[in-house]
Image 1 (cartoon, helix red, strand yellow):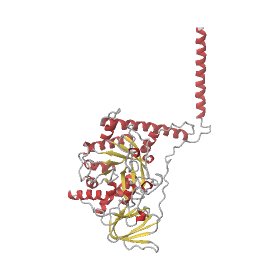
Image 2 (tube, helix red, strand yellow):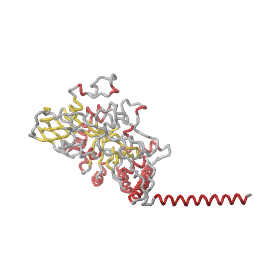
Image 3 (cartoon, rainbow, N blue to C red):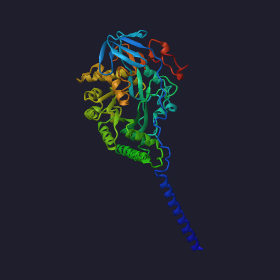
Image 4 (tube, one colour):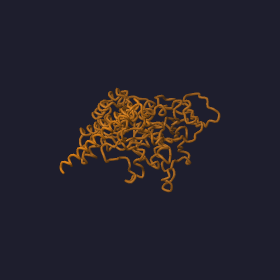
Length: 476
Protein backbone atom coordinates (compact mmCIF):
# COMPACT_ATOMS: atom_id res chain seq x y z
CA UNK A 1 0.00 0.00 0.00
CA UNK A 2 2.82 2.28 0.90
CA UNK A 3 4.54 1.45 -2.45
CA UNK A 4 1.42 2.32 -4.42
CA UNK A 5 1.23 5.66 -2.67
CA UNK A 6 4.82 6.44 -3.66
CA UNK A 7 4.09 5.39 -7.22
CA UNK A 8 1.05 7.58 -7.34
CA UNK A 9 3.06 10.49 -5.93
CA UNK A 10 5.78 9.98 -8.60
CA UNK A 11 3.23 9.93 -11.38
CA UNK A 12 1.55 13.03 -10.02
CA UNK A 13 4.91 14.81 -9.74
CA UNK A 14 5.83 13.81 -13.24
CA UNK A 15 2.51 15.12 -14.42
CA UNK A 16 3.07 18.42 -12.70
CA UNK A 17 6.55 18.66 -14.15
CA UNK A 18 5.12 18.03 -17.60
CA UNK A 19 2.51 20.66 -17.01
CA UNK A 20 5.14 23.16 -15.90
CA UNK A 21 7.25 22.35 -18.95
CA UNK A 22 4.23 22.68 -21.17
CA UNK A 23 3.40 25.97 -19.45
CA UNK A 24 6.92 27.18 -20.12
CA UNK A 25 6.54 26.27 -23.76
CA UNK A 26 3.25 28.11 -23.82
CA UNK A 27 4.87 31.18 -22.27
CA UNK A 28 7.67 30.94 -24.80
CA UNK A 29 5.16 30.81 -27.57
CA UNK A 30 3.36 33.86 -26.12
CA UNK A 31 6.60 35.79 -26.42
CA UNK A 32 7.03 34.72 -30.04
CA UNK A 33 7.39 37.86 -32.18
CA UNK A 34 5.19 36.23 -34.78
CA UNK A 35 2.27 36.23 -32.37
CA UNK A 36 0.00 39.25 -32.09
CA UNK A 37 1.01 41.54 -29.24
CA UNK A 38 -1.30 42.56 -26.45
CA UNK A 39 -1.93 46.32 -26.27
CA UNK A 40 1.00 48.23 -24.83
CA UNK A 41 0.38 49.32 -21.25
CA UNK A 42 1.18 52.97 -20.56
CA UNK A 43 0.61 54.53 -17.15
CA UNK A 44 -1.46 57.69 -17.26
CA UNK A 45 0.84 60.24 -15.64
CA UNK A 46 -1.85 62.91 -15.42
CA UNK A 47 -5.00 61.20 -14.15
CA UNK A 48 -6.31 64.38 -12.51
CA UNK A 49 -5.64 67.01 -15.18
CA UNK A 50 -6.02 70.72 -14.70
CA UNK A 51 -9.39 72.12 -15.67
CA UNK A 52 -8.29 75.69 -14.97
CA UNK A 53 -9.68 78.31 -17.30
CA UNK A 54 -8.73 81.98 -16.98
CA UNK A 55 -11.49 84.27 -15.75
CA UNK A 56 -12.92 86.77 -18.25
CA UNK A 57 -10.66 89.73 -18.82
CA UNK A 58 -10.55 92.87 -20.91
CA UNK A 59 -7.73 94.68 -22.62
CA UNK A 60 -6.11 96.82 -19.94
CA UNK A 61 -3.34 99.39 -19.89
CA UNK A 62 -1.78 100.38 -16.56
CA UNK A 63 -0.01 103.68 -17.12
CA UNK A 64 2.38 105.92 -15.25
CA UNK A 65 3.60 103.35 -12.72
CA UNK A 66 6.98 102.43 -11.35
CA UNK A 67 7.38 98.93 -12.74
CA UNK A 68 9.57 96.14 -11.36
CA UNK A 69 9.33 93.66 -14.21
CA UNK A 70 10.70 90.58 -12.45
CA UNK A 71 13.79 90.38 -14.66
CA UNK A 72 15.71 92.89 -12.56
CA UNK A 73 14.61 96.02 -14.42
CA UNK A 74 12.91 99.08 -12.89
CA UNK A 75 10.93 101.30 -15.25
CA UNK A 76 9.81 104.72 -14.05
CA UNK A 77 6.54 106.10 -15.39
CA UNK A 78 6.01 103.01 -17.46
CA UNK A 79 3.04 101.35 -19.06
CA UNK A 80 2.01 97.73 -19.12
CA UNK A 81 -0.51 96.52 -21.67
CA UNK A 82 -2.46 93.29 -21.17
CA UNK A 83 -4.83 91.55 -23.53
CA UNK A 84 -6.44 88.11 -23.73
CA UNK A 85 -4.74 87.05 -20.52
CA UNK A 86 -1.20 87.83 -21.69
CA UNK A 87 1.32 90.61 -21.29
CA UNK A 88 1.41 92.43 -24.61
CA UNK A 89 4.08 95.03 -23.91
CA UNK A 90 5.89 96.85 -21.11
CA UNK A 91 7.75 100.14 -21.44
CA UNK A 92 7.35 103.78 -22.38
CA UNK A 93 5.30 105.46 -25.11
CA UNK A 94 3.27 102.39 -25.90
CA UNK A 95 0.37 102.68 -28.30
CA UNK A 96 -2.77 101.99 -26.30
CA UNK A 97 -5.44 100.46 -28.52
CA UNK A 98 -8.87 102.02 -28.63
CA UNK A 99 -11.20 100.27 -26.23
CA UNK A 100 -8.56 99.36 -23.71
CA UNK A 101 -9.39 100.04 -20.08
CA UNK A 102 -6.82 102.53 -18.83
CA UNK A 103 -5.70 102.47 -15.20
CA UNK A 104 -3.93 105.62 -14.02
CA UNK A 105 -1.15 104.28 -11.79
CA UNK A 106 0.90 107.40 -11.19
CA UNK A 107 2.50 107.12 -7.77
CA UNK A 108 1.86 103.39 -7.68
CA UNK A 109 4.13 100.43 -8.31
CA UNK A 110 3.48 97.42 -10.53
CA UNK A 111 5.10 93.99 -10.21
CA UNK A 112 4.52 90.44 -11.39
CA UNK A 113 2.24 88.39 -9.16
CA UNK A 114 4.03 86.90 -6.17
CA UNK A 115 4.74 83.17 -6.24
CA UNK A 116 5.05 81.27 -2.96
CA UNK A 117 6.90 77.98 -3.44
CA UNK A 118 6.08 76.69 0.03
CA UNK A 119 2.51 76.81 1.28
CA UNK A 120 0.16 74.47 3.11
CA UNK A 121 -3.01 76.38 2.32
CA UNK A 122 -5.82 73.99 1.60
CA UNK A 123 -4.14 71.02 3.32
CA UNK A 124 -3.96 72.86 6.65
CA UNK A 125 -6.84 75.24 6.04
CA UNK A 126 -8.63 77.75 8.19
CA UNK A 127 -10.52 76.91 10.33
CA UNK A 128 -7.52 75.08 11.74
CA UNK A 129 -9.01 72.08 13.50
CA UNK A 130 -8.07 68.41 13.62
CA UNK A 131 -10.77 67.39 11.17
CA UNK A 132 -9.35 69.70 8.48
CA UNK A 133 -5.65 68.95 9.08
CA UNK A 134 -4.69 66.83 6.08
CA UNK A 135 -1.12 67.83 5.35
CA UNK A 136 0.99 65.13 6.98
CA UNK A 137 0.53 61.43 6.26
CA UNK A 138 2.64 60.56 9.30
CA UNK A 139 2.08 56.83 9.16
CA UNK A 140 5.27 55.73 7.42
CA UNK A 141 8.67 57.37 6.82
CA UNK A 142 8.17 57.09 3.05
CA UNK A 143 4.78 58.05 1.63
CA UNK A 144 5.69 59.08 -1.90
CA UNK A 145 2.32 57.71 -2.98
CA UNK A 146 0.25 60.54 -1.48
CA UNK A 147 -0.60 63.66 -3.46
CA UNK A 148 -1.24 66.97 -1.68
CA UNK A 149 -3.94 67.90 -4.19
CA UNK A 150 -6.14 65.18 -2.77
CA UNK A 151 -6.15 67.00 0.57
CA UNK A 152 -6.58 70.56 -0.73
CA UNK A 153 -9.84 72.18 0.37
CA UNK A 154 -10.63 74.93 -2.14
CA UNK A 155 -12.84 76.67 0.45
CA UNK A 156 -9.83 77.49 2.64
CA UNK A 157 -10.20 81.15 3.57
CA UNK A 158 -6.43 81.49 3.43
CA UNK A 159 -6.45 81.58 -0.37
CA UNK A 160 -8.37 84.85 -0.46
CA UNK A 161 -6.17 86.42 2.22
CA UNK A 162 -3.11 85.47 0.21
CA UNK A 163 -4.69 86.96 -2.92
CA UNK A 164 -5.13 90.26 -1.09
CA UNK A 165 -1.36 90.11 -0.44
CA UNK A 166 -0.56 89.78 -4.13
CA UNK A 167 -0.12 85.99 -4.30
CA UNK A 168 -1.12 84.75 -7.74
CA UNK A 169 0.56 81.31 -7.78
CA UNK A 170 1.53 78.96 -4.97
CA UNK A 171 2.85 75.46 -4.49
CA UNK A 172 0.96 73.39 -1.94
CA UNK A 173 3.24 70.86 -0.29
CA UNK A 174 2.59 68.02 2.13
CA UNK A 175 4.08 68.52 5.57
CA UNK A 176 7.58 67.55 6.64
CA UNK A 177 7.01 64.62 9.00
CA UNK A 178 8.39 62.08 6.56
CA UNK A 179 11.63 61.33 4.79
CA UNK A 180 9.62 61.41 1.59
CA UNK A 181 6.24 62.99 2.20
CA UNK A 182 4.44 63.02 -1.14
CA UNK A 183 3.66 65.13 -4.16
CA UNK A 184 3.08 68.86 -4.10
CA UNK A 185 0.87 70.71 -6.55
CA UNK A 186 1.12 74.19 -8.07
CA UNK A 187 -2.08 76.25 -8.11
CA UNK A 188 -3.32 79.48 -9.57
CA UNK A 189 -4.82 81.46 -6.70
CA UNK A 190 -8.37 81.65 -7.99
CA UNK A 191 -11.70 80.78 -6.39
CA UNK A 192 -12.88 77.35 -7.51
CA UNK A 193 -15.14 74.49 -6.56
CA UNK A 194 -12.46 71.88 -7.22
CA UNK A 195 -8.71 71.73 -6.87
CA UNK A 196 -8.45 70.68 -10.51
CA UNK A 197 -9.89 74.07 -11.48
CA UNK A 198 -7.01 75.72 -9.61
CA UNK A 199 -4.18 73.57 -10.97
CA UNK A 200 -1.57 75.52 -12.90
CA UNK A 201 -1.78 74.06 -16.41
CA UNK A 202 1.26 71.99 -17.26
CA UNK A 203 3.16 72.71 -14.04
CA UNK A 204 5.40 69.81 -13.02
CA UNK A 205 4.63 68.03 -9.79
CA UNK A 206 6.94 68.51 -6.82
CA UNK A 207 8.08 65.86 -4.34
CA UNK A 208 8.47 66.86 -0.71
CA UNK A 209 11.43 65.37 1.16
CA UNK A 210 12.54 66.27 4.68
CA UNK A 211 15.93 66.22 6.38
CA UNK A 212 16.97 66.07 9.98
CA UNK A 213 14.94 66.46 13.10
CA UNK A 214 11.37 66.12 11.84
CA UNK A 215 11.53 62.49 10.67
CA UNK A 216 13.61 61.64 13.75
CA UNK A 217 11.02 63.19 16.05
CA UNK A 218 8.02 61.61 14.39
CA UNK A 219 9.40 58.10 13.91
CA UNK A 220 12.07 57.79 16.60
CA UNK A 221 9.71 55.88 18.87
CA UNK A 222 7.83 54.17 16.07
CA UNK A 223 10.50 51.94 14.59
CA UNK A 224 12.71 54.63 13.13
CA UNK A 225 14.43 56.43 11.72
CA UNK A 226 15.75 57.79 14.98
CA UNK A 227 19.06 59.14 13.71
CA UNK A 228 20.28 61.15 10.77
CA UNK A 229 22.19 58.11 9.50
CA UNK A 230 18.93 56.17 9.49
CA UNK A 231 17.32 59.04 7.62
CA UNK A 232 19.90 58.64 4.88
CA UNK A 233 19.47 54.86 4.86
CA UNK A 234 15.72 55.33 4.47
CA UNK A 235 16.07 57.65 1.48
CA UNK A 236 18.62 55.38 -0.17
CA UNK A 237 16.50 52.26 0.28
CA UNK A 238 13.61 54.05 -1.38
CA UNK A 239 15.73 55.17 -4.33
CA UNK A 240 17.16 51.66 -4.76
CA UNK A 241 13.61 50.31 -5.02
CA UNK A 242 12.74 53.06 -7.45
CA UNK A 243 15.69 52.17 -9.70
CA UNK A 244 14.62 48.52 -9.65
CA UNK A 245 11.02 49.45 -10.46
CA UNK A 246 12.16 51.67 -13.31
CA UNK A 247 14.35 48.86 -14.67
CA UNK A 248 11.34 46.52 -14.75
CA UNK A 249 9.30 48.97 -16.80
CA UNK A 250 12.25 49.81 -19.05
CA UNK A 251 12.66 46.10 -19.76
CA UNK A 252 8.94 45.74 -20.41
CA UNK A 253 9.03 48.54 -22.99
CA UNK A 254 12.26 47.24 -24.55
CA UNK A 255 10.81 43.74 -24.87
CA UNK A 256 7.62 45.13 -26.37
CA UNK A 257 9.58 47.21 -28.85
CA UNK A 258 11.45 44.02 -29.79
CA UNK A 259 8.17 42.44 -30.80
CA UNK A 260 7.72 40.27 -27.72
CA UNK A 261 4.57 40.05 -25.66
CA UNK A 262 5.77 40.78 -22.13
CA UNK A 263 3.63 41.08 -19.04
CA UNK A 264 3.69 44.62 -17.61
CA UNK A 265 4.99 44.99 -14.04
CA UNK A 266 2.42 45.52 -11.29
CA UNK A 267 1.81 49.18 -10.60
CA UNK A 268 3.23 50.76 -7.45
CA UNK A 269 2.06 54.30 -6.62
CA UNK A 270 5.02 54.91 -4.32
CA UNK A 271 7.49 53.98 -6.98
CA UNK A 272 5.70 55.84 -9.76
CA UNK A 273 6.37 59.14 -8.04
CA UNK A 274 10.02 58.32 -7.38
CA UNK A 275 10.53 57.16 -10.96
CA UNK A 276 8.99 60.47 -12.02
CA UNK A 277 11.88 62.14 -10.22
CA UNK A 278 14.46 59.87 -11.84
CA UNK A 279 13.00 60.73 -15.24
CA UNK A 280 13.04 64.47 -14.53
CA UNK A 281 9.27 64.90 -14.53
CA UNK A 282 8.79 65.47 -10.79
CA UNK A 283 10.86 68.16 -9.05
CA UNK A 284 12.47 67.63 -5.65
CA UNK A 285 11.56 70.19 -2.97
CA UNK A 286 13.68 69.33 0.03
CA UNK A 287 13.00 70.64 3.55
CA UNK A 288 16.57 70.96 4.91
CA UNK A 289 18.11 73.42 7.38
CA UNK A 290 21.78 72.50 7.84
CA UNK A 291 24.47 72.99 5.24
CA UNK A 292 26.08 69.60 5.83
CA UNK A 293 22.77 67.82 5.34
CA UNK A 294 22.05 69.71 2.14
CA UNK A 295 25.40 68.53 0.77
CA UNK A 296 24.54 64.95 1.78
CA UNK A 297 21.29 65.26 -0.14
CA UNK A 298 23.16 66.61 -3.18
CA UNK A 299 25.57 63.69 -3.03
CA UNK A 300 22.69 61.23 -2.76
CA UNK A 301 21.00 62.82 -5.77
CA UNK A 302 24.20 62.23 -7.74
CA UNK A 303 24.38 58.63 -6.51
CA UNK A 304 20.94 57.87 -7.91
CA UNK A 305 20.95 60.20 -10.89
CA UNK A 306 18.36 62.87 -10.18
CA UNK A 307 18.44 66.61 -9.55
CA UNK A 308 17.22 68.66 -6.62
CA UNK A 309 15.18 71.69 -7.59
CA UNK A 310 15.02 73.56 -4.29
CA UNK A 311 16.02 73.37 -0.65
CA UNK A 312 13.29 74.80 1.57
CA UNK A 313 13.86 76.66 4.87
CA UNK A 314 17.60 76.33 4.19
CA UNK A 315 18.77 78.60 7.02
CA UNK A 316 22.39 77.58 6.44
CA UNK A 317 22.41 78.05 2.68
CA UNK A 318 24.83 80.97 3.09
CA UNK A 319 27.51 78.46 4.14
CA UNK A 320 27.31 76.57 0.85
CA UNK A 321 26.10 79.30 -1.51
CA UNK A 322 28.93 78.56 -3.96
CA UNK A 323 27.98 74.87 -4.10
CA UNK A 324 24.32 75.72 -4.64
CA UNK A 325 25.25 78.07 -7.45
CA UNK A 326 27.47 75.44 -9.08
CA UNK A 327 24.78 72.76 -8.80
CA UNK A 328 21.98 75.06 -10.02
CA UNK A 329 19.85 74.46 -6.94
CA UNK A 330 17.46 77.08 -5.53
CA UNK A 331 17.11 77.95 -1.85
CA UNK A 332 13.74 79.02 -0.48
CA UNK A 333 14.30 80.90 2.77
CA UNK A 334 12.73 83.09 5.41
CA UNK A 335 13.95 86.62 5.93
CA UNK A 336 14.57 86.40 9.67
CA UNK A 337 12.86 83.34 11.09
CA UNK A 338 15.40 80.95 12.58
CA UNK A 339 16.61 79.58 15.93
CA UNK A 340 13.29 77.96 16.86
CA UNK A 341 14.99 74.54 17.04
CA UNK A 342 18.58 73.37 17.10
CA UNK A 343 18.90 72.54 13.41
CA UNK A 344 17.64 76.06 12.65
CA UNK A 345 19.98 77.67 15.17
CA UNK A 346 22.71 78.94 12.86
CA UNK A 347 20.57 81.17 10.67
CA UNK A 348 21.47 84.75 9.85
CA UNK A 349 19.35 87.60 8.56
CA UNK A 350 21.69 88.06 5.59
CA UNK A 351 21.09 84.50 4.35
CA UNK A 352 18.97 85.39 1.32
CA UNK A 353 21.12 88.21 -0.06
CA UNK A 354 24.30 86.18 0.54
CA UNK A 355 22.91 83.29 -1.49
CA UNK A 356 21.88 85.66 -4.28
CA UNK A 357 25.27 87.39 -4.18
CA UNK A 358 26.96 84.05 -4.82
CA UNK A 359 24.95 83.69 -8.02
CA UNK A 360 22.61 81.05 -6.66
CA UNK A 361 18.83 81.06 -7.04
CA UNK A 362 17.43 82.83 -3.95
CA UNK A 363 13.74 82.75 -3.01
CA UNK A 364 11.66 84.20 -0.20
CA UNK A 365 9.01 81.73 0.92
CA UNK A 366 6.37 81.70 3.63
CA UNK A 367 5.48 78.20 4.93
CA UNK A 368 2.80 80.16 6.77
CA UNK A 369 -0.83 81.11 6.25
CA UNK A 370 -0.04 84.43 7.92
CA UNK A 371 3.36 85.18 6.41
CA UNK A 372 2.04 84.56 2.91
CA UNK A 373 -0.11 87.70 3.29
CA UNK A 374 2.97 89.91 3.70
CA UNK A 375 5.68 88.31 1.58
CA UNK A 376 6.56 91.72 0.14
CA UNK A 377 7.53 92.82 3.65
CA UNK A 378 9.59 89.66 4.18
CA UNK A 379 11.44 90.50 0.99
CA UNK A 380 12.02 94.05 2.20
CA UNK A 381 13.54 92.79 5.43
CA UNK A 382 15.94 90.47 3.63
CA UNK A 383 16.91 93.20 1.16
CA UNK A 384 17.54 95.70 3.98
CA UNK A 385 19.59 93.23 6.03
CA UNK A 386 21.76 92.60 3.00
CA UNK A 387 22.39 96.32 2.56
CA UNK A 388 23.40 96.66 6.19
CA UNK A 389 26.03 93.99 5.54
CA UNK A 390 27.23 95.74 2.39
CA UNK A 391 25.44 93.42 -0.03
CA UNK A 392 23.81 95.76 -2.52
CA UNK A 393 20.90 94.76 -4.69
CA UNK A 394 18.48 97.12 -6.38
CA UNK A 395 14.83 96.72 -5.46
CA UNK A 396 14.18 95.46 -8.97
CA UNK A 397 16.84 92.77 -8.59
CA UNK A 398 15.58 91.77 -5.16
CA UNK A 399 11.99 91.46 -6.35
CA UNK A 400 13.05 88.51 -8.51
CA UNK A 401 13.27 86.56 -5.23
CA UNK A 402 9.46 86.67 -5.11
CA UNK A 403 8.63 86.15 -8.77
CA UNK A 404 11.02 84.85 -11.42
CA UNK A 405 13.19 82.76 -9.09
CA UNK A 406 10.22 80.91 -7.58
CA UNK A 407 8.90 80.37 -11.10
CA UNK A 408 12.23 78.74 -11.99
CA UNK A 409 12.01 76.50 -8.93
CA UNK A 410 8.54 75.32 -9.95
CA UNK A 411 9.36 74.80 -13.61
CA UNK A 412 6.93 77.46 -14.84
CA UNK A 413 9.30 80.33 -15.65
CA UNK A 414 8.40 80.14 -19.32
CA UNK A 415 4.84 81.15 -18.44
CA UNK A 416 4.90 83.50 -15.46
CA UNK A 417 7.14 85.32 -12.97
CA UNK A 418 8.10 88.28 -15.18
CA UNK A 419 6.31 91.07 -16.99
CA UNK A 420 7.43 90.14 -20.49
CA UNK A 421 5.50 89.94 -23.71
CA UNK A 422 3.66 86.64 -24.05
CA UNK A 423 3.78 85.72 -20.38
CA UNK A 424 0.64 85.21 -18.30
CA UNK A 425 -0.72 88.57 -17.17
CA UNK A 426 -0.27 87.87 -13.45
CA UNK A 427 0.15 91.42 -12.20
CA UNK A 428 -0.07 93.35 -8.92
CA UNK A 429 -0.69 97.09 -8.61
CA UNK A 430 0.67 98.30 -5.27
CA UNK A 431 -0.48 101.47 -3.50
CA UNK A 432 3.18 102.49 -3.27
CA UNK A 433 6.65 101.04 -2.95
CA UNK A 434 6.11 97.35 -2.08
CA UNK A 435 9.24 97.51 0.09
CA UNK A 436 7.32 99.81 2.45
CA UNK A 437 5.26 98.42 5.31
CA UNK A 438 2.63 101.04 4.44
CA UNK A 439 2.05 99.74 0.92
CA UNK A 440 -0.65 97.22 0.09
CA UNK A 441 -1.77 95.36 -2.99
CA UNK A 442 -4.59 97.38 -4.55
CA UNK A 443 -5.34 95.35 -7.65
CA UNK A 444 -4.37 91.76 -8.43
CA UNK A 445 -4.71 90.38 -11.94
CA UNK A 446 -4.44 86.69 -12.80
CA UNK A 447 -4.22 85.91 -16.51
CA UNK A 448 -5.36 89.47 -17.15
CA UNK A 449 -8.55 89.12 -15.10
CA UNK A 450 -8.98 91.51 -12.18
CA UNK A 451 -9.38 89.06 -9.29
CA UNK A 452 -9.01 91.52 -6.41
CA UNK A 453 -9.60 95.24 -6.07
CA UNK A 454 -9.18 96.80 -2.65
CA UNK A 455 -11.45 99.66 -3.68
CA UNK A 456 -14.24 97.53 -5.11
CA UNK A 457 -16.24 95.58 -2.50
CA UNK A 458 -17.83 93.54 -5.26
CA UNK A 459 -14.44 91.91 -5.81
CA UNK A 460 -13.68 91.16 -2.18
CA UNK A 461 -13.02 87.43 -2.13
CA UNK A 462 -15.26 85.31 0.06
CA UNK A 463 -15.53 81.53 -0.01
CA UNK A 464 -18.80 79.66 0.34
CA UNK A 465 -17.65 78.57 3.77
CA UNK A 466 -17.53 82.20 4.92
CA UNK A 467 -21.04 83.14 3.84
CA UNK A 468 -22.92 84.15 6.94
CA UNK A 469 -19.80 83.64 9.06
CA UNK A 470 -18.10 86.99 8.68
CA UNK A 471 -18.32 90.39 7.09
CA UNK A 472 -17.29 90.59 3.47
CA UNK A 473 -14.02 92.49 3.32
CA UNK A 474 -12.69 91.35 6.69
CA UNK A 475 -9.53 90.29 4.89
CA UNK A 476 -8.37 93.91 4.64
